[in-house]
Image 1 (cartoon, rainbow, N blue to C red):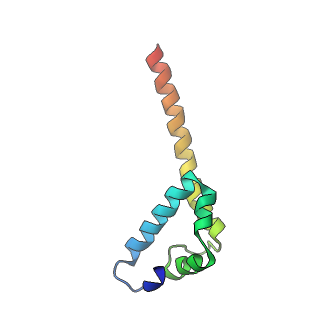
Image 2 (tube, one colour):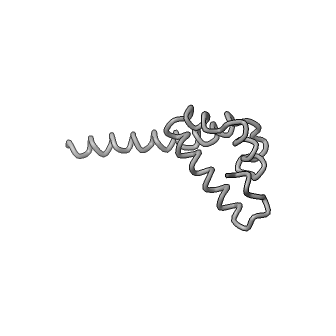
Length: 90
């Protein structure tokens, strides 16, 4: 499907952002599953149309970028819910 698009397409940026969000959501939940989705053929298309940008030169680095973005947010949400719970008990 991605091979049908060109970097000159009018909505290419929306396509890039959409795929980045999809991969980010999967990688946040299950990094290995996200990595398994990016075959050599898919990776070629991701780099060709700019879903993956330089200096990211491998699917592993691409997935790591999105998996790492979400981790600090998750920790702060967990800590906040613990704090909120303890306040309610008092």
